[in-house]
Image (cartoon, rainbow, N blue to C red):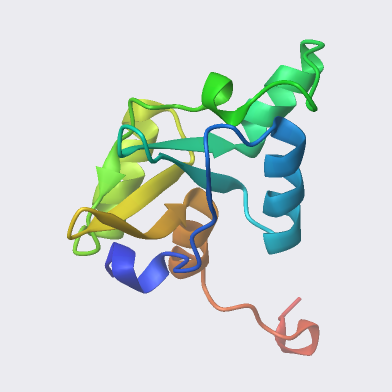
Length: 133
C-alpha cells in the first residue's frame, strides 16, 4: 500500500503569524493533529503539531502571544505519494515524529500520520458479535 492510499488529503495550512491558540482552534475544528505552516515571504514549509502546542503551553508560554513560527519544525522530512507505507513508517521511526507532509509537484497534497498507517495495516474492525471468545 502507498502513502497516497493512506494520507489525509485535507491539509490545514496556516501562516507563521498565527498564534498557538489560533492554530489549536483550527486543528481542533478540523480534527487533525498537525498543520502545515507556510511562510509566503520565504515559500518555506514547516509543520506544527499538537505536541508542539502542548509543550509550549506546558512550559508556561502564552498561547495568545506565541506564534506558530516560533514552534514550527522547519527541518521537515517530506514524503512522496508513491512511497510505500513501510518507507513512511521507517522515516517516522528514524526521525522520531508522527506526521509527514506529502509533496507532489512542490506543493503539499496531504499529510500521513502514524494513525493513518495503523488504520491501513490493522485488520478491519469486526462487530463485537463476530468476535470469537
